[in-house]
Length: 253
Image 1 (cartoon, rainbow, N blue to C red):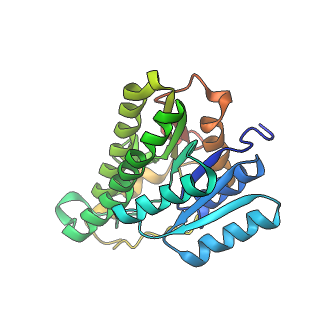
Image 2 (image 1 turned 90 degrees about the horizontal axis):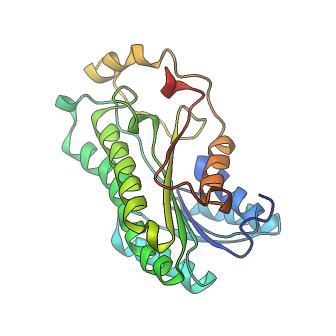
């Protein structure tokens, strides 16, 4: 896919680190102009600098993507700076505390759902008018192994990622006649800086423990990024509504 995104405008959320950073660097290496959207200003600016040093084009857009005003600013940055939005990668996300449903606090539930599900909804809704006007667009969401099963995370995270899967499939059906594709990756364990603040003595972590025996090897962020790029590329032009497990076969166990 060398040069496969020449001149295209790409928004990557959570791009200041981990999978998002790897995806942003990969898109830029393929000629895309990338909006680095992240809550962490230092991380976002660092990735912009990496891309520019490699001869690519990028701009940072910083803020909490669960807030409508921030979402509007991110999309406006892409449109004003790069002329539109060709690709949206909804990657930003947070973990829960592996809490079983009876133990989920209101703030844990609301924050996880807001960041993992509501933010992709808000961003997708904001970019759709631009993609519809252009008559094409690709959306790639980062779901999770927890979006495929009930034994990979706590209640809040699992619900949020199942929601991402549903959002992806509904998008694919609703807008396929307008030239817009929506797909998702479902990563298994991946080496990122996301941490889990879990009480190992609580019911949730204790109940989930046995289910992590067959998780497979830990993936590198670049392996997840490669799947994102493929789904966003013209090589995947007839792939729509797919949730691609990138998990070393964990979902097959």
